[in-house]
Length: 437
Image 1: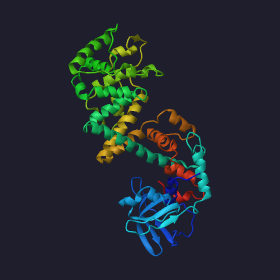
Image 2 (image 1 turned 135 degrees about the vertical axis):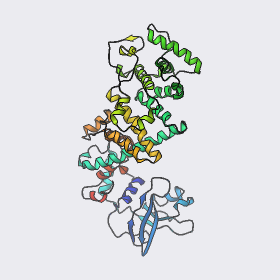
Image 3 (image 1 turned 180 degrees about the horizontal axis):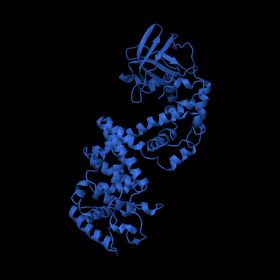
Image 4 (image 1 turned 60 degrees about the horizontal axis):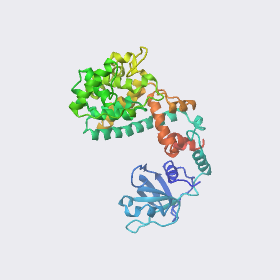
């Protein structure tokens, strides 16, 4: 198989070339003193490297390609960022490359310096068609290696989520409460009804809801009306009352509801029906004011949990899961699993994002601690990992496993994965990358 450029990045980063007396293609002795820092952004692949060519010590950048001619094909000759490249590492040297001042860039050709066993290990891993490429090899990895890597990619996941939060902040002119409200609404719908819940929240700004904070009938009318549930006549008193109230509020505020057909009931348990979730959401709106600000300053996880527990729903919902269809009396509270889902996907993310975007470690740690004190999620991803004996201890680890699957395993980025890197090496070479974390 043709080895990708990332494979050569990996070899350079961990100094995995066969140990010989290295020479440049010009025949000069080459000593690699420091491989430099792997640059994941635009510009040369490795920065601040140190090498010795002959008797001369060089400090600068290193660029890596499959062929030397890739330099010109990638248009580096026109980019000033590449002027400080001190070494061109290539599999095959097929063209001499010059800097803009006419000096030749030294070349290190590595095609004959790579372990055949390492190439075979990589080829085998890429050829795997299992749920994750390394599924058959996980048992050889020490648990502390996996745990350390999960800790790293949890931070990666939370930073990615923070960027999404920042986009919401831009949309709502820096209002953390408004951004939190939109994200909270989306997660109230969980996966099945996330989109209509977000659309609902966007159609019901908090400024409008604040006008009716102490008026349950109006809040319920606004929530159900904007959700598209009050466009018909009902036989029962409660839905008729809020329907009539919504007609008045709709005209008063110039509102336009979303389409009812967007809400999905199929394959949902009655406790997860969107009608009941909307009632719970309306109750939360009534119970809370400046919710993000309050939660963000609360350090007791039990108190944060209580915010979403025992919401003051209208008694109608004690015997209904949807309008016009009576059922036997049942609990209308959000279940613990549902609350934990909200804490994981909204509260923890916003706490971390608040710290990350404002440079405050207190809130970064708060977001992480919250995840570490919630039990692991139960979903298809996690069940598969448990079958492979990767058993998460808490939500921090289950979130990291989701990141591992989606960002690394599904895309076969084994060369960027701490677990994959260990598996690629045979036992004799494993010590060479003991510092990957």
